[in-house]
Length: 100
Length: 100
Image (cartoon, rainbow over all chains, first blue to last red; front, side, top):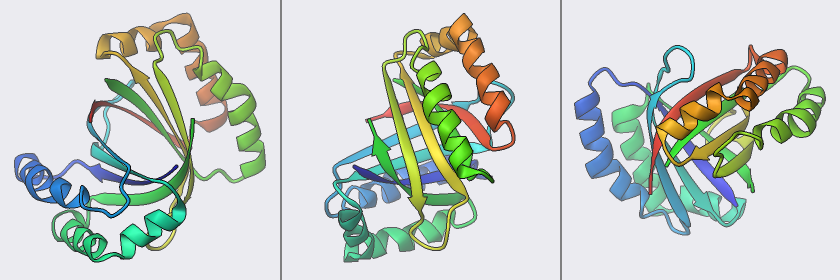
C-alpha cells in the first residue's frame, strides 16, 4: 500500500480550524477516487516536551498509480484547493510506501 | 487506539542509517510491551516539490496508559537510548488518538 500523509502544525485558532477540518475538509477527502482507508490522528502531546503538531491524516491507496490518479482527479483538485484555503502555512504533505 | 509516531528527516548517510534502523532499532521497537501494531512507512516524495522526511514509524497501543507503560518499561528505555544514539538530530516523536 501507498499512503499520502498530511501533517498539520497547531493552528492559531484551534476551534475554527477544527470546525473547517471536520465539517468541510475531511468530507472532501473521503471523496478521493480509490481511497482504501483514511486514518485521522488527533495529536495530544509528546513523550518528552511538547509537540508543534495538531492533527495528521493518512490516506491509503493500492498503489502509487492510484494515488497519483486521485491527486489529479477533479475530486483531488478540489481537496487541494480546500487545503490551501485554510491550512497552507500549517500543512506538510508527503507520500510513502507502507510496510507491515 | 493511541499511537506513538516517530518521524525522521533524511539522514546524511542513508545507507548507514537504514542499516541501523532496520537491523537494530526496529527489532528493539517490536519489544515494546503492549504494542498492538507497528507500521513503518518509507517516505518516497511529496505531491508537489520534495520532502525532507525519510521514514515514519507508527506504534499502536490500546490506550494512553498502555503507551505510557511501554515508554517507561525497561524495553522502552532501551529503545529510547538506541533512538538517541543514531537519530537524535533527525527524529520528531509525538502521540495521538487514532480515529477510524
